[in-house]
Image 1 (tube, one colour):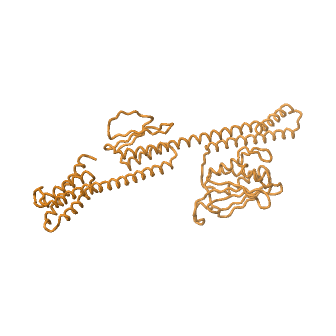
Image 2 (cartoon, one colour):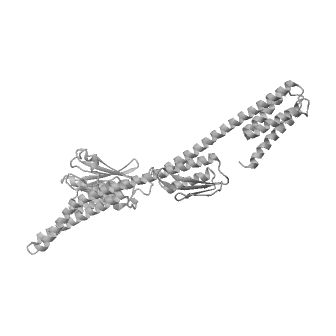
Image 3 (tube, helix red, strand yellow):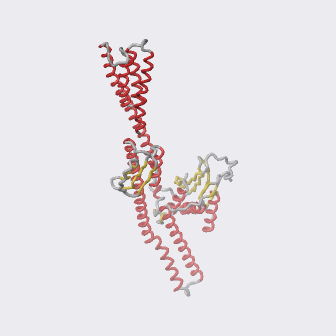
Length: 464
């Protein structure tokens, strides 16, 4: 508080007593000493409540003197003729002092309560804000914003490292942002005038909350890195196992077939040479697919999958998969059904084609040769769904979650990358993929993708 404001409070307290004295002087013949005392006590209460302890004491002293000088006979002198009136004046003075002190104390308690409530609001606001942040820069910006907007700081800076300052400016405050083990920087706060003790305490608590938020973010980053390292190590181990067997097998077949083709070329018939060449091509395609799957699962695990989403038709993707299947098998192995008013969905066409191809390939692997898998599209509860229905053997209960794990070996001994890739692609599109039993035997894979809610299928341009 500035010197001028402090002096002004004492002047106002004296002026209030003076005004009350003038009012009572005009009514001195109609009122009693008790009336005078009560009116003066009221003015002292007002001074204590609105101006504090010091001004109330000044008001009590001045009122005692004015009471004696202007209102107690003989007038205009400090001599008191009646001993009873002298006793009344002394008692009044004591009561005035006590009344002022009690009122001022109540005022201080109310001010302290308001200050504590204000501090709690600021700290709660900080805590709520920090809990939603996930990076350091956001914490720094939130701290600066609250210090400037709520605590009226003139300038706020986050200095790197621990700053040893010898600044003697009373309006500057330096606080270290740190925890038990780490230092995140030095907070420098500048005000128009020297901050009060309560303001310093509040800023210190705010910096402590910011330090805790920074520590939480750093611990989360370490945990994510540790998890990434664990995943990378697990993937590396599985990859080595895969290279040692699954990748080596087609390489060995290609190598052996190529050697036979070179060394026995003259002894082989045209049909045998064609068969060996076809074997080399098939194994090369198989090897290329396995390497591609390994790269895809690596990108998924690393979070490096790039999605170029656009409005696409799920039925068109299913049609492409069915066409590819016919080209490979020269048989109709897929029966598809989609409603006429299936909405368009935003997704990456190439990635969704890969995910659906993996699911269809897995289903065809166990589908009886004399039957077809069914692919059914539907739209319900704000989701576009595609069901791939297989009529082969049932899925064992313990396999329901294992089939989504990378490198899980199925019943035929092949490494299970396709299902893990399919789920990763669909979840990257904010979709879901799960498995259910087929009625009558078999397995049904169902995936769903979110669509725009509350759309009008008759008017929406994104619907077919």
